[in-house]
Image (cartoon, rainbow, N blue to C red):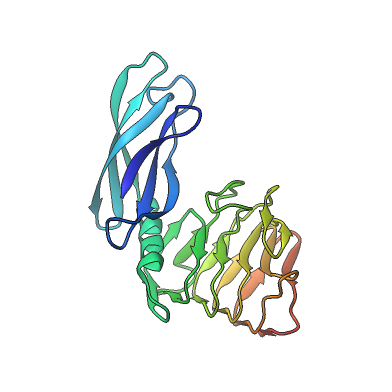
Length: 239
């Protein structure tokens, strides 16, 4: 669901949260910020109302300008709601479930904290997780495009790109690199992905070793510092 919330600065913004029972809510993320300084929605935004047309999300919302004049805006997006649906699928899943992701580009961070299989239906050329060079995240620490926290997760068939370094700290790793994928669990299977245009392609936690991972048939290229770093001795890495 979408909601408006007020931070310590008393500026309202629009976020999303997911629930499996309508009572307990999690995966809160900022989805729509205020507009540029001085604009019609530059002071606060709220009261979101979303309609879906296929994969196109249309969100009507209220905005307040610096003189406290209220207006109504329309935002159209093909990716934000897709991302929320993937998050909701992970939240609602049980161990061993498979989540299929259809073609599209999602500009957000995917945090996987359950033992699931996440697979694209049409391969990495058509299914993209784009960290969008962000430097902060509601999940804490830095901003990898994909953060695998649960054991025995499979991630297959995605392009993963544009993760930038931050001053955050990732448990088991230390200062956060701009990693396409960070694994802080065991038994991850990464197959058939393209990991590119990040600071580091893949990080396997070294201070709390990430063990027994299988990294196979991935293309890891054009990352500015390293392709793969971390504790690799107990993992299988193939072309």
